[in-house]
Image (cartoon, rainbow, N blue to C red):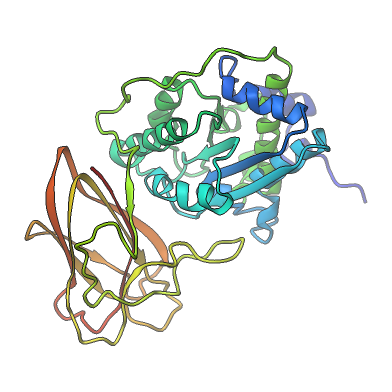
Length: 397
């Protein structure tokens, strides 16, 4: 039996399908020298490196009823592009991580995209529209920080902003799109066309659940990206230098964020009782775990010696794990003190419903000027025998 074409799976006509694909493109990057250079490499059969960073949609969730992440939009896009340029060697890195926003993406960029291949990508797809919290700090500022960091550290990387859609809630496209427009990068909105009745796409056919597309939804997203490349390929080569705005759009610039490493650059760091390594951190669909080098207070320990360090910064990001509810270990709460004062108590899960070893991001310090701060993390009273894992930290000087 012949498989139905993707537009029939989505409940629309072929004409409406391809019209939606074209209309999804907000900005085709006609003045983007980086995109033009990327297309030239494809035409000249030069090896290219494509990466995609984002949340679970980028990881491929929902594809083949969530059983085959390689049918996700990013993988399908690279396969389709490879078919158009069969003599070009394409290296692909799908760096999606479920449940994570741009605030975590900026800390993952070098670690998960640059370092594994020892180079910046020629094309980077950024998809962080559906995991936002709706706040400027967590969404807009972080999205700009990532975009500005990538453009500033590589003169070649073309960045494409992709706004995935969410069935049961509005995404953060209105908040982050002004950033993409400010940096004049190509932009694609899936929300603009899936939610527009003009194109006849049936949401229940597009989505596998409340946010993740079925395989046909992922195919649609891939076709939108391919269309962008085809438009760029049909233009004359852009020779104009792509300039980066001298000043950031947002008042808080975190593009220079530095990770605090396990064997770290913060020389005053004392791990205390957080000297273990948690091997049950968030798993990736493609295999492995995220943030395997972490600071872990081991369950069963009666030691409650604090993790302490001093750092000169104006911004400090703290990422911890919410323990998976299927695991037998007991996880508790940790208190974070900034300059000797209790900032907040963070619950590490204690087998709570809905926890899946997922990452949680918290901004501990956000100031206009840099100054010396002391940071202390210790288990809350009564929780010294329970676990807690600090996955990562990052600061801006």
